[in-house]
Amino acid sequence: MGYHLVDPDDLEQWDDRPTDVRSLSAAAGHEYHDSKIGMRVYDLAPGEQPGLQYHYHDEQVEVFYVLEGELHVETPEGEYVVERDQALFVDPGSPQRAYNPEDADGNTRVLAIGAPSVEDVHAYEPDGS
Image 1 (cartoon, rainbow, N blue to C red):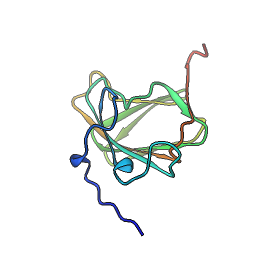
Image 2: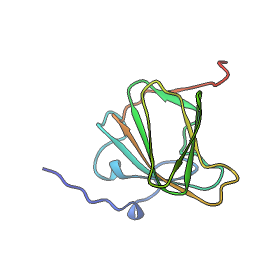
Image 3: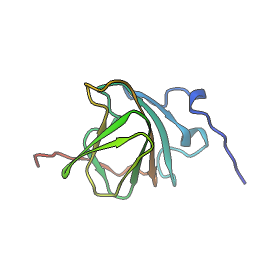
Image 4: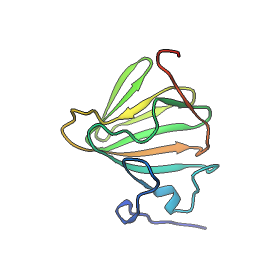
């Protein structure tokens, strides 16, 4: 059996992304690639995004649960505004770009979950080029 109590405030910056990101799943021993789950907490200042540009995944389901502020998610069908205590599920094959707008009143804190945590990301060009 295994249990891992993880406090994101006790974790170091997870990687070299330009935004504050803490990997809960890595702290619990679930490596980034080929794991059943990836779970990270992002603290996005105005104008920041979680790291990936407009993209989609072949297998991975992504979930964004907003802890503080609002998260904007651009999709080919329009933009979603995910408010505090709301979650947006993004199915495989569905392009999206999550971000905190430049003109936001403050930071956005988001719990991002990806399952499975596999390297299946593809860039998406909204204009088809």
